Image 1 (cartoon, rainbow, N blue to C red):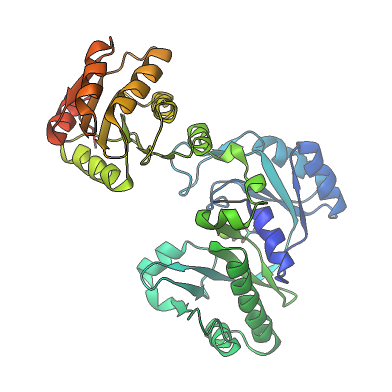
Image 2 (image 1 turned 45 degrees about the vertical axis):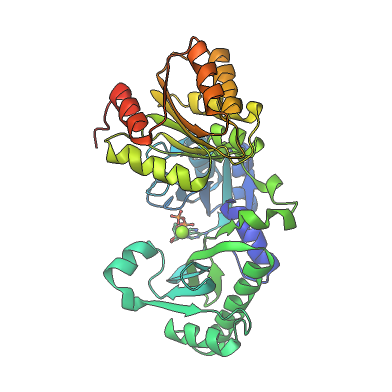
Length: 389
Ligand code: ADP
Ligand code: MG
């Protein structure tokens, strides 16, 4: 789960990590008023669920409240496209107004889960501000990585070694040790999969400050944090993903034009691979799960049809616990309700498959039934057309 920079900074502040003074605004006149309170000169920062805003014009240094108002009017409602948003970009609905800080040096600091070792690791570099992926590619020796043993935790001497590797000495080094230690505590207690400060800065007045902040929560730990869902900004999420979440369906939008309804993540992955193998391009990954009901299947199907990129639907279901007749009923109900005329290919096998096939055959939908996966994939790709890339 994602949250905004201003929310991430509130959390960091509660762990004693220094962040710039700032306030979030939902309207342009609030931005102007806050800028006045900050003394005029400040930074106006678009809040979207993606980084790379600086280069995309989403972070503006303004000299006075009037300039802040102009920047806010320009940014509110604007769609920002950054390397992290994808081509459709994200719309700006909230703005963080922050004191303008005089920066002497920028660093990179994050704690994330290393899936290889199944441990948290601290990543730090004296080359902040730029994308860590690019740095890892170009000069991996400039990135310092510390893997944390969960039983021992993060010891101060380890944090100090990192701070020294970043070139910090004396008081700043000890401040940095405290900051890294607090960041790790935050990561554990808040169940984060990522806490990233890029850039962490040393100001001209010689203080450490988290200038940007990104926090991702572990979705599997949401049950421990009932307050998290209220932090979500729905304007930053694909409406179809929101609906899918309400019905407990895993839905992920992809770039192609073939909607896929599948049961089980493994079968979903295999389906996407097969579609690509035959030159097709999946429009999504939608897993209805093991014991879906007719209504959930119908909702899943409506979500797929709600995506304007979809030119045809491929259903690939193995009926174990899930009954094929239930799938067929759900597909028929949803397709009839929305008046779907797109081609549908249903590959089903397993429990009550003959009953499911009969229901589909008797419906007046544009639907083709197959037993064989390759045959099903070939026919949907044949009807929708191959992907151009
Ligand atoms: P993003 O990572 O999305 O581009 P950042 O918050 O990192 O956004 O801002 C981009 C750059 O803008 C930072 O690297 C920093 O140099 C500058 N910046 C951000 N906030 C401030 C601030 N409050 N004062 C001065 N400069 C800032
Ligand atoms: Mg940043």
